[in-house]
Image (cartoon, rainbow, N blue to C red; front, side, top):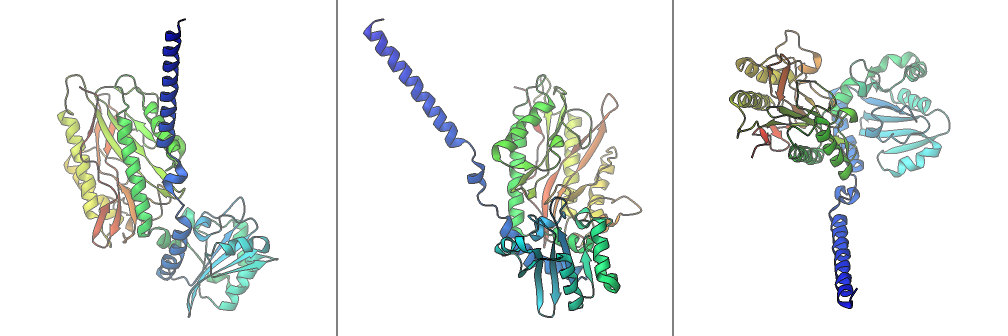
Length: 444
């Protein structure tokens, strides 16, 4: 090989290596670093504010002047993370109470863990215990003369049902003749968890926006006649991994991508997405391992020669969107969840929608189906207690507008325009801009 050819070859190799290095550098610089992207977890400070600002109001609203939460290792109370007991090893008793001097918090913790808990600066007082923390807490309750003591034992709210049977037995035995002062924390936890601070709502807005943006991006991956529901779901799973977030609910069913007949809460299948299909994506993510989104986006797959959705599909979309907007318009402080459901059910009747078994909406926040009023039962003669609850400022919801129809094969399909909103003093406010138009997939 001539010197000239060798020289040219070296230049080519150097060029390739340079381009490769640039490409790697670009990949590294544009890749998401979750720790940098999300920054420091705001939960510790938000938790303190929730305890100091919202918990006293919740205790007063539920008529309770003392609340005891018992935390322990391996089988912890579901409310532990909200009171600072998520790292409990030995049994610890977390006390919140109101007396003539105001609101206070006190923890009886195993002495080996008390120092670290005190360092978190969540509670007014952390007392190291070498004996039974619960026994010390009960002694304090008796000395203080509280009229009612809430404990986490509930028949209706799993977040308020953290005490085991033997733990409750032990508390009742220690309380003795004062055990009649024990009441369920059901209402207290309802009043506390159902309200979100403004900074929490801002985090949920970010979660909702990412959820919506990724769904729209996912629809751009669809190749009619080739892509499957499961492949589109996998694309969204990759987004979860890339951004270092978590699933909004059970991982096997998040997201639910469904281009066929209704499957309810389910996993995506290997069904091939075909022209003429209406595609549903129901998707949620969890930020900082604490706050959840729940958003649905819908698309229509164009058939050959189509430039827009056919009349019937467009009508179903418009009807569903109108139901969502009716529910949104009905949401304000002081109304029941049932009345919100009824507002959109009446539109469903007018549009001659098939019936759907799901409520119009549900609270969303720390989990997809959070504590708060149910937006259901609007057309029922007997409204469930959860649907009779009143909406309050600071509550956050995911809610749908429905239209269901019979497909040619006799199965049903539902468009359920699901958005998220927060209740304000003047009504409701969407967390992000709602979907206005049916997304069109395929075509030229």
